[in-house]
Length: 379
Image 1 (tube, one colour):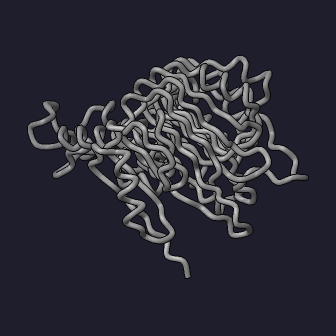
Image 2 (cartoon, rainbow, N blue to C red):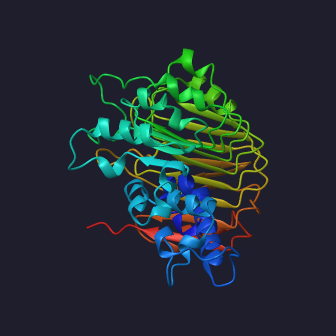
């Protein structure tokens, strides 16, 4: 994860941290193999998709399949028209099917997605679709052994937790659990996860989990986190039905939390035991939380600390951060009995720049190497 994402785009950084590096590796490998002399196979003639200067078509099918998988859904399917050599590649390459590019300007969208799934014969790699329409698609054999799943709402009318009087979202499709043995990345949003469903959840290979505006009880959320023994990155973005999250994980390396001040907001995160935790990211414009770190001996990145005053009252919605015995409320150090020497990267958000506040914070982190300051200038 790039340090530049600490103040902005934290959720995106957590969600794609592994995908970007994997894609870069595959692309670099393909380019290297396309250089003269790097691939020992004979050149293809023009009828097979070769020709002067066309070294890409000389790559093995496995490498070309990875290139096709990196492409967006539309562009990946269009590679079939490049040459006869490419016609079978998209159908046999790992499937990367994203609903987003088809949202606008096309009728019969559901039928189109169904046809794409029916036509594909390769393994399922990534599938992104609306959570309320995905159940039948998730049962398609084209998605067997799926590795990455994103189920969210594509209706942006309610981007915040559901207001009073609005019906709760539909439950998470039951078919999503058939990938529990293979999923490595999952983003779930705009749905309800009932207690009866959560109790049976177990994802032994899942290492990245994002929960965005999900309605789930506190006990079920805890069960879901505990049911991911290989989890490395966890994002909890808004949501409702729970007030406290406790973290006891020997595998977690990054946690991102965004709360929103509603009746059932997330108020407390307690990191009881996280021996591998390196990044703790707090974001959102209306915060009122208590973050308590009891044991995280490898914590290096912390942000974004801020102080927020409500536009509607004089109540302070700042986060209270307790690092071992050090207490920081908003940007003010309330108690400093023990410095935190592991933190090397810190980001803060301020309404007005105050060097006294910054220097006071730096006393808590004597081994700090990078400090990012985001100053909001009010009109």
